[in-house]
Image (cartoon, rainbow, N blue to C red; front, side):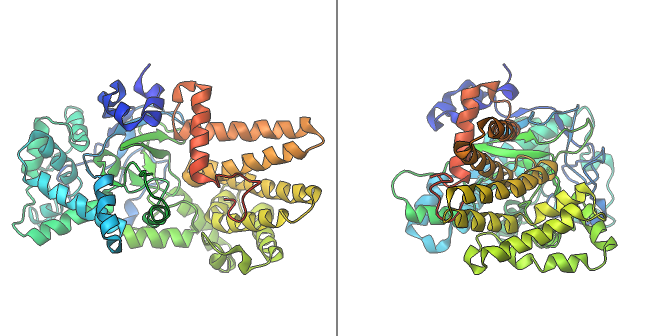
Length: 509
C-alpha cells in the first residue's frame, strides 16, 4: 500500500509512535504534482510573497497553465481525495517553547511569540554551516528574491540567470522547496545572497517570509487558542502552531480552490478537493471562504496586495455589474453576516425574514444562474449560521412536533449551504461543520419520526455526504470503516458542540 493510499497512521499515531514509524521515514512525499515551468528560484517576486503584482495575471481555475509566475500543476488527471503531497515544515516554532513563553508573558500574545521564535530559528539556520540547516535556509530563501531587483534595471534576465525550470532540474527545485539536502541547495544559497549586512533589514525580510508564507494554527486561530489555554490546565491540547512549508507556500490563491490541507502533528497533508485535469494549477484559498465578494477582495488586497480575479470572483462581479442595485441589496445584510454575532440582537421572525428575502433572490430569480446563486450563498454563510442558531435555540422551547418542523426547515436551508460548499469550497472546515449539523438534525428527526423508512433514506443521504467530505479532506484512509468513523468523530469534536444537538444551549454551529 502506498503512502497516498493510507494516511491513517499519520493521523492517529501518538507523537512518539509517529517519530518512529516507517510512514514518517517516507516524508517528504510528492504525488502527481510538479512545480510550474515558469517558477524561478531567482525571479522577481514580491518579497516574502507568492504573487506577482499585476492583478491581471490571475487565471481562473479552468486555465491549464500557471500564469502567476510560480505554482504547482497536476502531472496527470486527479480525482477528488487524492493525496498531492505530504511534508514537514523546513523550519518551525516549537509549540512547547511558544506556550512556555506565553504562560510567563501572556501580554505578548501567542502570534507575536510564535513569530519571534520562528524568526530567531531562521536567523540561526541562516548563519549555520550544517547541511540540514543550510537546506532549510535554501527552502525559505527560495520564497523571496526581492534583492534581484538590483541585478537588472529592466527586470529582464535570461534563463541561465533566472534558474528557470526545465525537465532536467524540476526535481532539484522541488528538493530545495522541501528542504532536502543536495547540491542544488548550495547553488540556491549562492543565488540568494540576501545578507545585506543590515540586521534589521534581514529581520524585515525574514518576517515578510513568515507573514506571507508561514502556516499557522489549523481549525483554530490565535485568539481561540488563547481562550482555550486560559480555560484549561495540564495537558497541552495543541501539537503545532507555526511553520514554513515552502512547497505548499507556492500554491496560489483562488476563492474556488481545488485542494485542501490538514495537519497530522507537524506533517501537512494535502489532498485534491475537486477533479483536476493534467496541467491544471493546484489552488487553495488564503482566506476563509464564507465571506461576501467585497469582504474577500478587501481581505486579499489588504493582506496579500493583489486583487483576486478567480472564477468565483469574476462570476459574482459580473452579476453585480449586470443587475442594477443588487450589490446595495446584499450590502444591507453585511452587518448580520458576521461570525459569533449575538443571535438575540434580532427576534427569530426577523432572522427568518432576512433568510427568506435572500433565498427569494438566490433561488427564484430568473436573472441568476444556479452556479452564481451557490457562489453568493456561500458568501453569506455566517448570516445563515446565525439564523440556524436562532431557529434551533427557539425550537427547544416548542413542543416536540413543532420543534421537528422547525428543525426540518433548518435542514432544508442547510442543505443548500452544503451544495454551495461542494461547488466552491469542498471539504473545507466550514463545510464539514455544516455537514455535521445536517447529520445531527436528520438523526434527531429520524429518532422522532413515525415514518422511519422515509427519514432513514435521508439519514443515509447525509451519512454518505459526511463520509464523502471526510474521504476528500483526509484521503482514502485505507477505506477502513472504523478509521473513517474515528476521523468523523475527531472532526465533530473539534467543529461542533461536544454535547451534541440535543444538549446544546446556544451555539449549535
